[in-house]
Image (cartoon, rainbow over all chains, first blue to last red; front, side, top):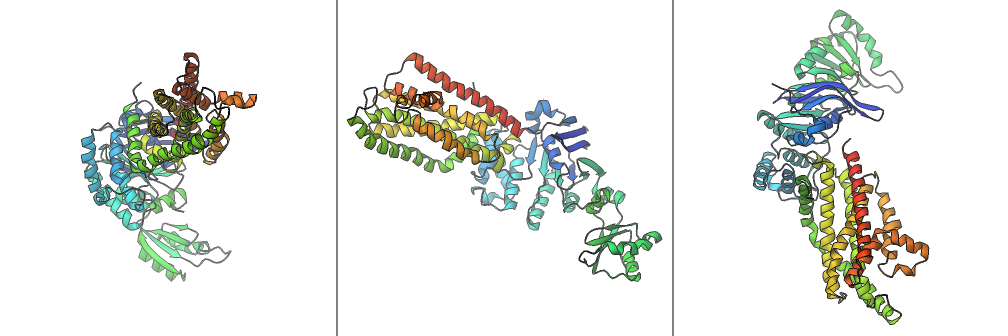
Length: 316
Length: 258
């Protein structure tokens, strides 16, 4: 089947700054595709190009089989966009936000009215339909924005950091709704700097760093390729002006030499021991006479993949 | 020229918002002419009429009212095209939301100007009612001040929108108000004939779009309009509208499609 989004050597420059530096992307119909990366990696810029509102500087981009430079309005007619910052009309009610938005897509009034009722039900805001948007909580505003993005029954929904700034409960409500959309066969394209979000929602993702794609695959594939099964985290006291956890890194070298751990990552506040068996590795650390303040054995996550690929953590 | 469906959708969005505050906006549209016509027209006017009076052989109130109606249109149009436009670009990001639909920047601009036209026309109509109630209408021709107010409004709305589309900060709007709009309001023939001004300032007044709007509305209202000067006034206002619209379209395109 043809890709819904296809990019080859896609570049976006603002003056001398290169925000997106030659990326290749293919997104299949029905897929949930994620761009994972820290702030400034070029995720939002990529989303704006895919949203047919920002013309690429160079490279090839086809969205829904069309060229955004020529068919921008026709492409946008079939997209749903949830931007990073909510841009609802704060002078309108929840319901009116959807009603006026539907008109831009040339939909008959009755259709928009019907869909607005359905969508407000879908995002669980029917009881707030007549309320003004302004005083709503962040999570509710986000849900209104998502409902608005669905008013034209889009083929592809673009979500730029859908849950950034929301409390954990609101995030879970949102994830559950997005998961339902995905089950209905809607193609989701999202950006995030939360690995748990990427793991929850994405079938496939690319890790972006400094405008480039550092790795690509399903969350499980990426972890299998770029990390170990488990991670043993060791926290050491931070000494004023001292080396901190780094001082203990050398002491762990024998573990790596013996194959009990694959590698050691040094973070400012802790050491990460990458290993197939975290508990066994921890026992050996203690056997070496090291006394960390605290320790934690966990499964590898996309955060570890990112750390491995870029040497930096996702959320700084 | 029929506005695109997207431009009409934008107008519909703004009108939907307007429905929520039309009462306060209507109150302002009535109260302002009442205050001005009472203070300047009646009180000051009685003094003027006891002296040499104003040209045209009419009372001061009849002289003042059509000009004031047009000057109010300038204020409304400028107000609607300054903070709200910058706000929609920068603070609420309303235009970004609209551009995620099939709409283009030019549709946003057209819809915005249609909304300003609506605001100016309804406010001017309210003004006209007050004007008549004050007995400030020298003849039924005063109704012709309405289309002049509309065109004058657009002659301000378009360039002010162009300005707003280039701004990052709103401080420039205060300067616009202080150094251009208020001086124009006071010295462009609304309250007294510009022939009263020193020659240099008189020519400056002729260069302002407001003077042309005020002069045309007054000539029409007092039945003193001549085809030649009327066309000149119309042409000058149209020039500001067209040039301003072109600049605004360019600025919005640059700002929104990056």
